[in-house]
Length: 201
Length: 219
Image 1 (cartoon, each protein chain N blue to C red):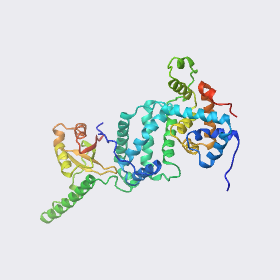
Image 2 (tube, one colour; image 1 turned 60 degrees about the vertical axis):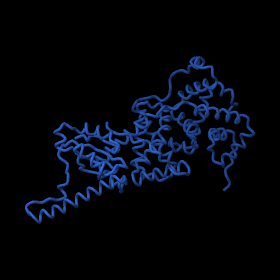
Image 3 (cartoon, rainbow over the protein chains, first blue to last red; image 1 turned 60 degrees about the horizontal axis):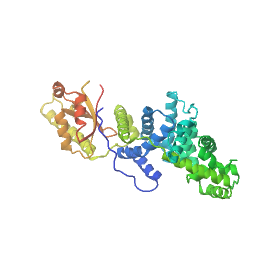
Image 4 (cartoon, chains in turn red, blue; image 1 turned 90 degrees about the horizontal axis):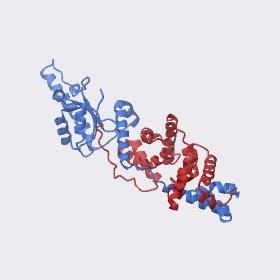
């Protein structure tokens, strides 16, 4: 294909909160189909969506498709966003639902059935932080995708409980329950953490 | 209305992840922090959750630097192709021209001037020879199955640059601009006779600095 690069523009949205800046970009897309604004918005989400989707066990070859399907919606529906929620929850929510569809199409079970392999951890590294990271990676892989997403959205992307609920399209109490269960599961596979916390209620 | 003050251990326990990430609403943060201050179990759990948060953030992200541009190019080509396929619908949805760059305005102006010129020429010709009509419709029109390319010009491309580029490649613009500033240009009969194809021309002009997008049109 003879498409020439549309380089990442140096364009930076004007000040204000990240959401306000991103909303301004969206308005430019809705108002005048502004390609530079679209490129900037795409760039600001590409990395976090890639990470989120890989955490969902979306196949590498499907990640690009999910991201582009998401931004196809952003391009075509920009004028329909009414601002009832954060722009980030709208965009990430679209990506989440597209990813679930991709997982169903690929018949991927997003939860590992493999038994937890403690020996593989002990021989991987003697560095404490690195070992904790390896334990955590194995622990995360054992979580159902909904719990993994709740953790990722809370701890990596820093969303509030209400925002996570909006993205995952579920009640706030469901988010709390998913995180509660995820924490319990991780505690079983992270020995340092298991000893760190007291008995829960 | 006074805020609800839940003071149960279970409720505070459930809120700890958002105390750890700093996203608790002020009204909740107050009572959760008050509970944590006098609950050793919650303090231990808060410390554990902060450690998990740090570890999750440290987990390597996929390296997507080079993939992002390629991925965006694919999406943009899809948008261009869609809007070229349904220009009327896209225009109706967009409501306004998609691109207000100097280039697009010049090209629109050029088409208008060309039309007016041809109309005037037609009028004069009609005065001289009523059997011969030349109208706007005589402007370049699409030839059935003629090889064509879809292209978008750089925002800083001058009219002279564009004219030179089109002339050298034997191209004539037959439609555009689309909602994303895209034009369709056909290869002249002479260019085709000399061996040029939509693929070869698209490949050449895509390297031209005055062009940001070039793709053969499937016909």
